[in-house]
Every structure is written in structure tokens, then in C-alpha cells.
Amino acid sequence: MTGFSFTRKPRTAREQALLAASERTMACGIRGPSLRAENQMVVERAQGSHLFDCSGNEYIDYLLGSGPMFIGHAHPAVVAAVARQLEAGSSFLLGNEPAIRLCEAIVAAVPCAEKVTLHNSGSEAAHYAMRLARAYRRRDVILKFEGGYHGMGDDALMSNQWTFRPAEFPVPVPNSAGIPAGVAGQVLVAPFNDLDRTEQIVRRHADALGGIIVEPLCRTTPPVPGFLPGLQALARELDIPLIFDEVVTGFRLAFGGAQVRYGVVPDLCALGKAISAGHPLGVVAGRADIMDLAGAATAMTPRHVRLTGTYSGNPVSAAAALAVIEELKTPGIYEAVEARGRRLQMALARSLEQAGIAAQVVGEATAFQPWFTAEAVRDHRSTLRADWGRGLRFGDLLLDRGIIKGHEKFFLSTAHTDDDIDYTIDAFEQVAGQL
Ligand code: PMP
Image (cartoon, rainbow, N blue to C red; front, side, top):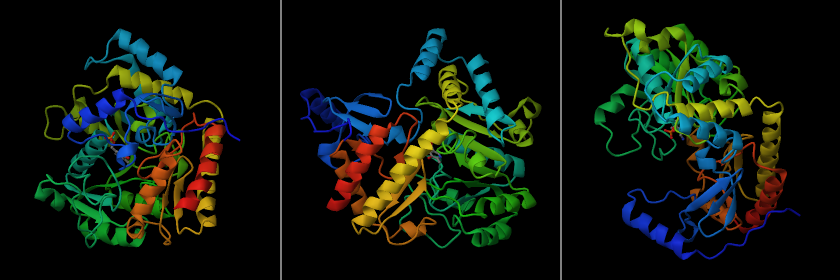
């Protein structure tokens, strides 16, 4: 028996009117976790691990705004820190204590971080990390991995997880209209978890390569033993900066990120949503000799790398991130969230197996997803024959029971309770039988 229950209340006139207005005016529409019209919602508020729509429905939230709410929605320490900062001003483009303290906290916690720059989104952080690498190497080409996501920059939108018709490696495939054709000439693509193929591509193109960018946990596919250390050794031998995109994993997989969890230190990393509790933040951190290209020493020289924007180092996002990092120092907090996540992940795999459904539950305890395929998942291509329709139906059936997940992942937060997990495990058993 769990405390949570769900019976969907009819949509109020207010929510109906808001949804109708969104269709008339919002170019991208509302991005709900479901494609079904009856599942669209307008959020009223969220607290901890639960989210409430404008019709008074309460949901258990494993979408978490696509990951940033790692310590839960509206965490009191974050609310207090942000409120304090709002009273003191929101943006200066000048030095401020929260931004300075945040950079100090990142240098203290993240192994690769000798110097830090602050920005507004993960997309920006990944884009700027690539620019720094290119400037350091004085070369233009970036190697990325098929299926890896690095945000909305033109280089990043190549051969990511929305690549349904991949090309022969290392040729990239654009994931959006509007990307200049020339971008394809400055990106190479390698298979994640295949060190031999990657090494062949890197050695063949070493002279053109400005950097290598990788999600250490590629979407939800963990690195096989040896892959990240091998990549690091190769990059080091050829003096090509290795960038970890830790926008999802930074401070989620461990205090200090995937580089702590997997024990491999890159040259640069991009951090973002997992540390600022929903406040716009992107962070580039890394080796001082590379990061210093953005500093005063190169100013007014052709070597200088420009990275600043109006909101860079804004104190509100920095105050939020400092509060999150402080909370994540709580003894036992990672052990507790990982134990709950692992219980959920294992229960999902068990429910699907008992129902005779071909599926792989892939990922880490706080970020995982089911792939509806009989094939073992080790890279993007092994997911291409997965049954997407079944994946969407799975999400819809959970939503009918008051459980929200993203199109892809389940994200766990430190605010999820045993009751949330027990209710969700019961729902898995019911839903698996209906798939
Ligand atoms: N890199 C990774 C690994 C991400 O998951 C994301 C966001 N999903 C980004 C970059 C882009 O971050 P943002 O949406 O904040 O621009």
C-alpha cells in the first residue's frame, strides 16, 4: 500500500483556455512528455518530486525539467538563496560574490577544473568548450560520438540521438534544417564504446582535429570498461583536448561528476543543468593553459577566445548553484538517491521481463531508460531497431497513473521518496501487462 494515488480530474476551463492559447501562439507548441492530446498539461507548480497541473492533478515527476531538478522542485535552500539574491539585484556583468564562490566550489569539486567560465545553458557551455579546444589546437574539426547530444549549436546538432539514418563513419548527419552545409566539413563522428574504430578515425584525421567531445554517459549508455581511459590516453598522446559534456552527469553521477564516477579526467568539461536547480547556467571548466585563452593575458591578441554574454556570471543562477552544491555535500545523499534509483531501475527490468517484453533497461541509477529491443545496447546503432511506438505507449500508460517521465529517461532526484518508488514499481507491474 502506498500513500500516493491518482485519478485524473477533468480539465478545468482555465487549463483548456491555456492549452488553446498555446496552440495559437507558441511556434513549437507545448512540449509534453506525451504525444496524446489528452495528456497535454499546463503546470501550476511543483514541489519536491511532485508536480501539479492547472486542473489540480498531482503527478510523480521523473522528467524533472529534463534533469535539472536533482534536489527536487522548489527546494527551500534554493528558494531562499535565490530570493536573497533577487533582492540584491539580478544581473550586473560585473564581479559578484556568488559567481566567484561558484567558480571556487567547482574548482574544489571537479577534477579537471583548474579555471572556470560561467554562461547560461548547456548548449553554450558545450559550444564554448569546443571553441576553446579549437583555439588551443588551432584546428577546426571536432570529433563527436554518434548519438551524443551536446545542445543546440550547429556543430552539436550533428549525428545526435535523433539520427535515424546514420551515414558511414566518420561522416556526420545534420539533425535539423537550417544548419549551413559547411558545418558537416568540421565535424567527424565515431562510434561510442568502440575504441578501435575511434582510434583509427582520430589517427587518420589527427592533423585536422581541434577537439574530441563525448558524453561520458552517452545519453543513458554507460561507457564500457577501458573506453574512456583509452580515449583519454589517445587524446593526451596527440595533444587533442578531450571534452566531457557533463551537462547531465555533472554532480548527478557523483559529487564532481562522471569524471569522479568513472575515474577519468578530461582536459575540459561542460556543466549545466544538474547543478543550478532550474536556473539558467552553463559552465566550462578545465585545464588552466586552455581556459586562460579566454583571459586577460591574450586580450587584444589573435589568440584570444571570446566567451562572454550579457548574463555570464549572473548572480541568481550562481546563488542557486551554490545552494545545490552545498546540499549535495550532505553525508549519504548520493547513496540514498542511488539506492532508490537502482531499486526502480531493477524493478522496471523485472516487470518487463516477467511480462515477456523484449527490453533493455540502460543507464545509471539516477538516469536510465528502457529500450524496447532484444538487442544489447552499447551504442546508438544498437538502439535503431528499438520499438519507439511501444516506448511512447509505455510513457502514456504511466501518465494515466500519474507518473511523468521524459520521452527517453527516468531522472531521479534526492526528493523522491520510498513511497514514490513503491507506487511507481506497482505501476510498472500493471503497465508491463498492458504493453
Ligand atoms: N549537453 C547535454 C549532454 C545535454 O543533455 C544537454 C541538454 N539536454 C545539453 C548539452 C544542452 O543543454 P541546454 O538544454 O541547457 O542548452
